[in-house]
Image (tube, rainbow, N blue to C red; front, top):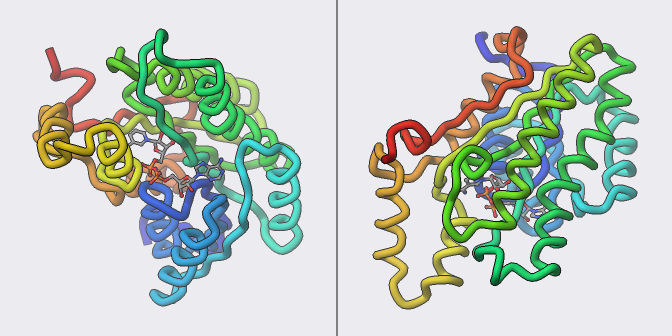
Length: 258
Ligand SMILES: NC(=O)c1ccc[n+]([C@@H]2O[C@H](COP(=O)([O-])OP(=O)(O)OC[C@H]3O[C@@H](n4cnc5c(N)ncnc54)[C@H](O)[C@@H]3O)[C@@H](O)[C@H]2O)c1
């Protein structure tokens, strides 16, 4: 089977919702044992039971990606019974605001999850990958890593860092058989987007949804499954020649707007 993950264990952070949930389901369908790391227990467990209903294999670990000790502990626990082959650092949080209305607490919060969380994941995984002479990392960046998005000061900072941290890791570990790439989605319809619209535009949610859809030249938002299929390709052996690269998946957002 092409794009098979049979016999591989994949760790997916933020696998309880949205893009991470779709990645977990897709990887499990392709034969991987999926380890979902999320701080939301209900969502994490629900994803596991959905995967098990379709005869997939999954387990849930509650953990805050920003907490290094917790992350190291979970990786160590998983490694006792599994050879970790794949890490997808997907957990992330959003923030709306320009520099003037971004306070230092907002900046730290975004840094802790979106940057330090990715650092913690890679830092925990690399010793295992080095020892076994191989491993694949996919980090979730964003079109905000590429182009200016208005009112996204802190979020853009973090997604720029995800991109450059990934280039650095790809280069430093290329001789250890470790591949590291990023995915940069434009707007994808997930609870992350619904929550954002609800919080920031409570009085005109439908209009905002329409506007956000139209910012992609293709005229709609992406689907979590579309991002999951790209993640599957990048984590499969079919992508064994790909490292140190970013993959926009954006309905034409970066190149066709303006
Ligand atoms: N949805 C989009 O439009 C979009 C676009 C570009 C990039 N992204 C990125 O894709 C990723 C996933 O986004 P989504 O839309 O699926 O979001 P989502 O909010 O639907 O899911 C994110 C998941 O991460 C978990 N999470 C958040 N902080 C965590 C922490 N500290 N520790 C452990 N788990 C944590 C949440 O509980 C949730 O299950 C994020 O990194 C986001 O920045 C999303």
